[in-house]
Length: 248
Ligand code: FPP
Image 1 (cartoon, rainbow, N blue to C red):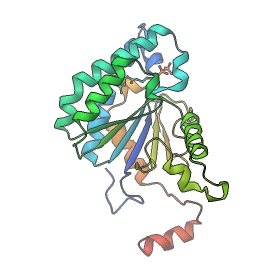
Image 2 (image 1 turned 90 degrees about the vertical axis):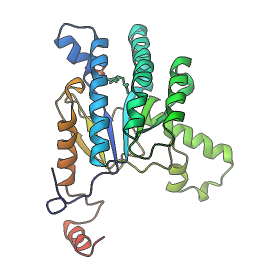
Image 3 (image 1 turned 45 degrees about the vertical axis):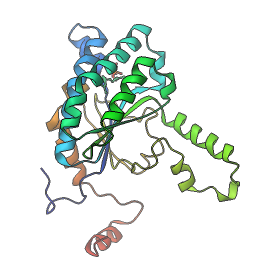
């Protein structure tokens, strides 16, 4: 594991994950796609534990995208049922680990059982002060930006008064810092409409590991690799080293 002597970056406060490859993982085993999603829950459990142990403050998981509504009805129903059963089954462990649950997305479009389970676990974990686990559900980055623009227009704000902070404050969870690191499993290398505003300066980590095989060690390795990267934010390498030497 990276230590402060060998690391360029501090531990990321916020890690976002595109959990991809469940369907292929299941098909490779001659199983239904839903089998892959069910096994993906073990990976969720592992990554939540690893993030909490490392001291990551926020972990956002892309659990169901706006585009996922176009999947076969049986798969959508199975995913929603899996979400409800996982939330009910894991809530005590989340509390034991000090994990607070939050969610982002067009939650009104979720089945009632899902909304109830989410509301219940969010309420029961609201006092937890460890990792904040954020589930992105019925979510897409373009949806979130569109909603933000609608809010601004409804507020009657003058165009010249709108700046980046205005937009930022109208995002789904404005108090949550942008992810420093995005992980995507399964070898795909794209953002798929995830956190388009918030990922502007994130480091991207793509791994060929399928989500149901992704475990604590993979997560720790991704964080370790992130810590060794040079993040310049538009500055030259010389400016960056000067700023590091000056402690900022
Ligand atoms: C992408 O794999 C995965 C999803 C669309 C759903 C992720 C859901 C889970 C891991 C289970 C439930 C989650 C929680 C938080 C309890 P894919 O189906 O697109 O895989 P493929 O690209 O191989 O087809």
